Image 1 (cartoon, rainbow, N blue to C red):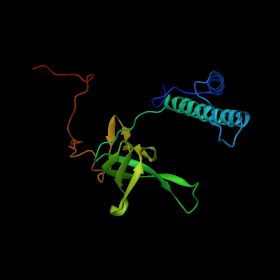
Image 2 (cartoon, rainbow, N blue to C red):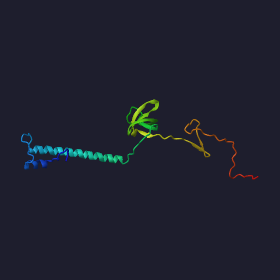
Image 3 (cartoon, helix red, strand yellow):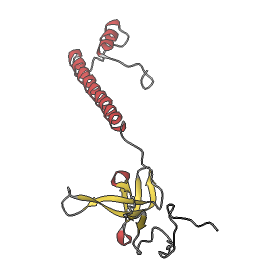
Image 4 (cartoon, rainbow, N blue to C red):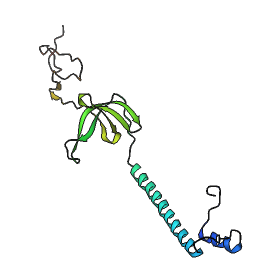
Length: 172
């Protein structure tokens, strides 16, 4: 049943008209052949539409095989893909920016440099990973004094005498 009535097709129309269950109206401007040809065209159109919907679901399923759900937290730092010039094909990852709030599952309000705010889709956002460059000298990390990411650093006095394991120990 479709919309509280049984569906009809061209063969059902012919059968009903021959058996007298549903006689064809006599005041129509179309003949039976014209009506059936038009019905056939309508059925083909609906079939093509249904096939397009099926294909669309297949494309979505194929895309979602590798898609991952991205969920960001308010206050999280991100980088954004924004146009770099007037050329629409030149875009670069810029940032960091801070997420202020979210509107829909994939739309976030971010605060750019200078206090400007913009709504962006999650596909234009990536997590911002702080990279720390350190150099090791004799198993000691060299950190620039301007870096505040490390908090308070304690300085070890270089003149402290350290006994090596291979040195001779005097027992008293």
